[in-house]
Length: 451
Image (cartoon, rainbow, N blue to C red):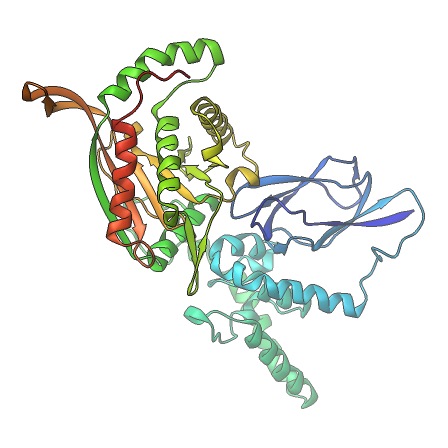
């Protein structure tokens, strides 16, 4: 028999860690190669992880709710074959220290993810279900290893952000507790946590309700994991980037008439819907080639210029959440290719079939708020990008039309474009010229082209 370590796989570009959501198999279960063993959540997407080998799941190394670095061991599978030293049944002390170091590396990410990681970690044991403040997976792991009850953990004074208990706080507490053991004072200290634990169990259920009173007629609904992630990222983006938004109105009459001519042909011939979004994406990709400085990100005092043009498209999901799949190398696709890719990504997004790669590597984002009838918006930048554009509804309105006979009033198809950009690296001139160039491509659309 051989024991093989199953490690956290790399699940897309820039994805360096994942949170264990659910183990689909239990210790002792027989599993086939490529059979799904667990569900993992990354900052891009939730996905199932298949088994790397067929055999028996003999050990689960990471509990639900913990954050794991890519490449770190998560389980041990016993297969038929010779013994191997790759996965010993009980980790040596040195390996144990390495696992602690891996958890330390995940601390910063776990802390930034707020309560979403706490929910999984806290509910590992019923004893941890009474937590009244956030604890990172690392702190929870140390508490579990050292057999610190939740009632005892609640008494530890935190020195971190908003009073959070840090790794250093835990080590300091353990050191003082150990010194207390040597001094014989543990006899007087131990009963307090135990008594607190008993008192906690005797508390009425109303104590577990939200501490804040909202009054009658208010239903308290906890955010789901994706909504928490969206909320966190939007707040972080506003804190990171000084947003400026420029607006421009474009006359899309020629474009609208061209699309009306071709949309049935494309649907019958290629089986995809020719919406306005692919046309907008194409115009954005062309404008990025004209103004490559908009295609960058910021790292400290450095500006990282991106060679690849990867346009993300915001997709509203049936559950009212939002996700942004990416069209990689957009500028290398023709309009039909972009149309197919948009259709594919939207379909995958709404059926929860997006892969991590589908959500990685975006360098610019487009949001079509016009599909909801909105005219204008001030979109929030997708970090680490430096700009985002929203396009509004196309509406008919009277407008001045220049003709050889002079100016006339005509009914035109008009649309507003809103361009938000990071004022750290994009000034008004570049931001304004960029949105103007996109509008130019749309207004001067070649109505003689085929698709």
